[in-house]
Image (tube, rainbow, N blue to C red; front, top):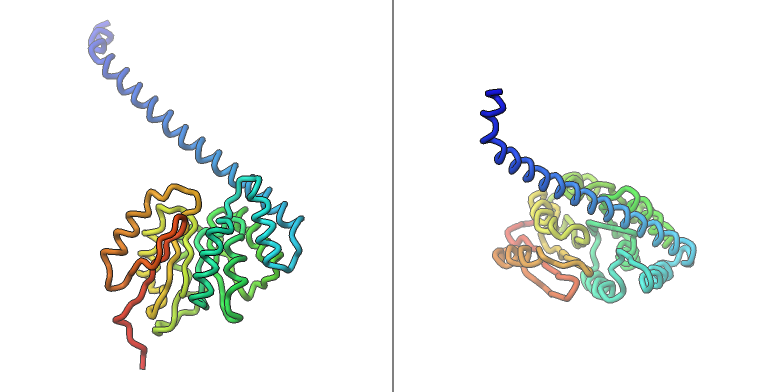
Length: 261
């Protein structure tokens, strides 16, 4: 009996802790449910987009694949960047003439096809996609567009896991002309700055010049300011080339690098 009496003063604290735990647990459950719904919607979107493109496009013709993507996006939710951002991307690829391109976040393959059709004959694209289903469907779309495995490679991985492994795929030899010429970031905007830091740390960016396109699409670019503030604080290596509504181009150059004798 004395134990019950002694515990009575502690009851308010117990109830308070219990209530806080319930709120925290409910918040965690809500977050997990929202993540699961986004994943399911994303997978359903990837499947339906792929099915439409695969059945309606002219196989072997990259432009037909892109037009079919855009036709689908006119009436359905779609992860593709669309023709407006796509045209800005085309202009950048034509201007830069890259040989080695890294795409972080390939989704259903729309952007991959846009880039591949403009690469020089010896050009190569490495596409990184976290979702195994999207990676599989995106790779099939690239093949349907008429490209061969010798022209591209799809890595199913997070960007953080993929970046340290890229040297073996790119055959970089530390010369001033070696490294990535173009990087497309179209995955999680919160990862843009960490991934840029990782690419520089791993010495994967071409020292003589590499353009990085930060693609935001219709997403709220809450992290855009953080990236640009960091870029502008390092004028010795980075500069902002252009800022469009849905895409920002930054340029990296390591002027201290010298060609090995």
